[in-house]
Image 1 (tube, rainbow, N blue to C red):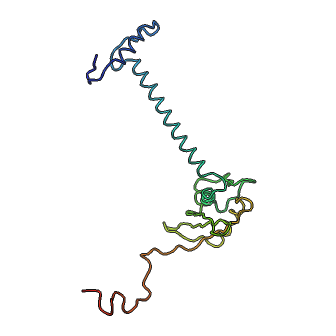
Image 2 (image 1 turned 90 degrees about the horizontal axis):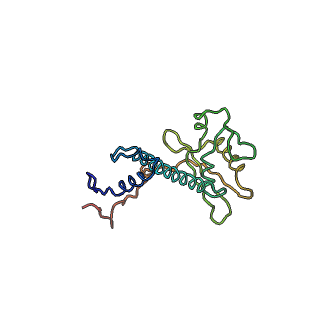
Image 3 (image 1 turned 30 degrees about the horizontal axis):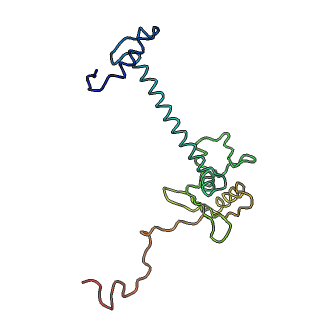
Length: 197
């Protein structure tokens, strides 16, 4: 038997036949598209699909958390640098801040490190943490007092025996901001002749 849309209705017929064999389901005898058992089947299948999506999202979230929170890795140091809250104290024996009584706005305002990069120094067993803030959408150097407090924080959370060098330098100008300070007299010339023709 085929439905109006041309698809086979064997599954529907099989379900209807198996339901007819069960006396407690004998009242569900409609063959229409909006039959109660069809709606129940749809709700159950949609719920299963939604649950699978939740599991996928949870797996992705856990994978990301594990990826970023492998303690002592370069990514972990970078994440901790970005999590720094200026003016807040760490919880005793922890690498997390005590945010009790603080609003979301206070917490966000205290996160002065907007950019961070962590690398290993070549030829030395030392980590280099480069940090910068942001002002009016542009990269800015942390102030000396901010840099000092940030260094203190990194020293508190670092792994024992790991030397860490914290740097906050002024941003380099973009290529478009460079100005030619001087040009040789023969700039653009070839063999004393003009390169233009």
